[in-house]
Image 1 (cartoon, rainbow, N blue to C red):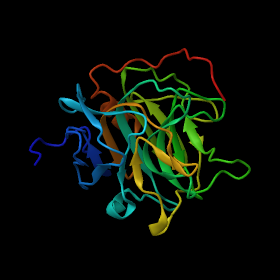
Image 2: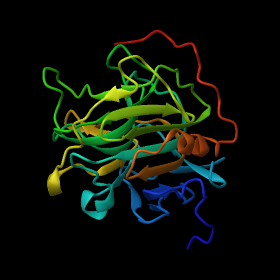
Image 3: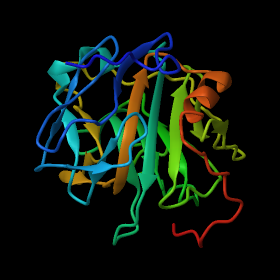
Length: 266
């Protein structure tokens, strides 16, 4: 049983669950905070490595690795309705993978079943973007009308570097989605903040599971996050700028937002 207290910077109003990924491979990763939800390894053991953020260790996800909490086991994470708010924060180290593809960090987001709710993503390659922090919200569960996929997202302009620890987040306050990199809003005209006054899809019992490291799309799991996870937190409200800056300050040395980016692929 855990004896160390929850870090005060994380124990903010609205906290649902916080995972620090100190458990060994093969074990459920058990949340701290109000809801002790268990992240299960969904496709084999996920390696525990030295050098974490909230302890000695972190989880290292390779292509094909992901965690899941079945929907029925995490009702507090089912944030939905016209007045719903959410914040997802992750302390992570991005690593390279062999394909160019967006990376799902965490959320309730199932594209195959048209049961999208909310999700934190990296490298979201829509709206002429890439190598960024992004937050998706859907009020319908399905694709944006006129498109084959959901286009409703806040997308930052900064280049998220590889092999550095970052604190990435997105917030939704019922009116705007915002993407944050290392405690700072990463503005992009028209897309961060992104106006979305429509709420979050209410999928009922048939909705998405909570997944970390991938989402279900095209009939199978994909959009793999490849890298290390040192911490993950979900809140039932939109945190403010000062709160997000305090969470980013828990990194040993947050890197600056890079002004340069590699060529964008659409």
